[in-house]
Image: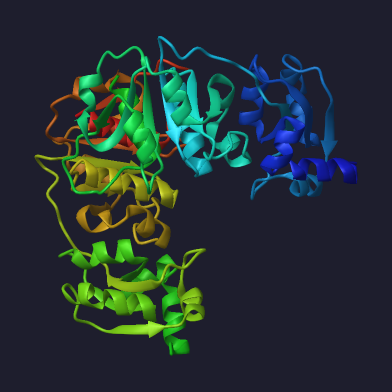
Length: 244
Length: 244
């Protein structure tokens, strides 16, 4: 049986404040948890699952994880889950600490992407295109928000997320070229073959902030032949990366 | 004051069954409603708004709309709204009837896109790239679902949505080439310059159904350099269209 204290501890991890203090986060469901267990940069602290799932998956889990596993009841899972429909198991992971070089690579910079679903989708896109680092403004959604964790489908462990003051970063790293996705820049097809640089994606309703826009090397644009006013931030990121 | 009967009528339009019987749908918020009012293919039947918004916007509205407008209270708007945070006004529109030719054009085919947010995003992407028609399987989300309407940001009036049995459509129109987004097809860059054809996007977790896959002319793939297992359906649609 799950203790009251541990139940409350897991529930507290639904909130950024406690994830930050404890330096851990939760992930749920077979697919996401198994992907994270395979990661070499993230380590697991606890797996809580329904009896049937645990029984079926223990051999596979034990290849990657030797720590504690606890069988819980459906009603206990419902109490600790951050999902509307809890999915067989929940695991607690230690936050990862990586430091990928940005020089000599393509990376993404996100200015105020606040929707967790969007952030998760962008992390998956980065992982698809082999992008290793994403620079995020401090007011972006938290990468360890349960909704972000679920929507990355395991890509979280392969992409290095750096939360920082973007303007200061740009000033310090002013030799690295930065390309801001905007409505009036040069055609993204001109970036073909780019091997180093930072692609900046802005908040969906407000776009990129004036300060960041002023600091960027160049504005780039996805050519439009129709009439829609804008594209979803994640879609824009995907299209730009596919053209490099 | 809003009558009980009319309140119930609007609430019923949150559901597909009643939208189908009544042949109308609802849209909310200044941006979406103003875009739809400007459309020549969709006509408005009623605007219900808070006093302040109505007062400020009546001159702009009257350029496009001469029908009934009713001032309502905040609590009344909350009762009829499909949004978590109601946004000043709600309007009832007649569903549009268009019939765009598919021959000689690029169009999208959606096989079981069930998430309303994804469908709305895809409609916006189509509108960005000037795609005029989207063929949808009968089990796709309803284009008039309030969440779809809100996330299209007005693009709904510029893209023709055709709900049909996709396999039958493909058999009947077998001279039109169809390209299925899959994990093992030819590189999408080879489609560059394509001027007629149907791009097929499948359900995010299950992909394109076996029957449709068998009927398609060719499989196409977005090249992957990283490790993510898949891309979001809307992101894939955006990337493919950007390469034509």
